[in-house]
Length: 93
Ligand SMILES: [Zn+2]
View 1 (cartoon, rainbow, N blue to C red):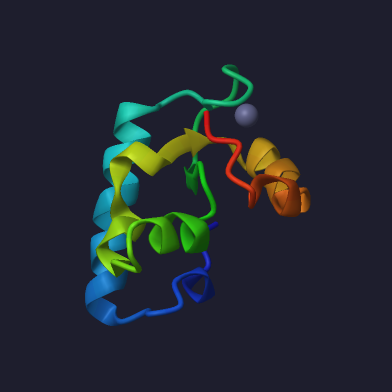
View 2 (cartoon, rainbow, N blue to C red):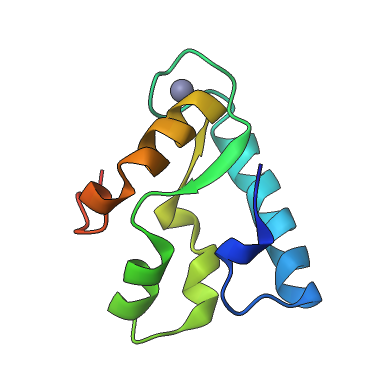
């Protein structure tokens, strides 16, 4: 599940925004974008949020950019998180 600590600039307003964004992503990608089998339960940053924000001049609102979010199942999210270092370079889609 989503961990508030993932948002370095967390506030109640941003958490509300995130929850709304997550619902949009899960509605758009009801099936996991990685395995294309399981139902999506997590809105995942395609490019690590910190990297993506830095690329956009540090604009924190880019954290919620739907173009950098995809719906994934927990198994795929956990697998990706485990090798997050490899993703930080920005493999993209
Ligand atoms: Zn999956």
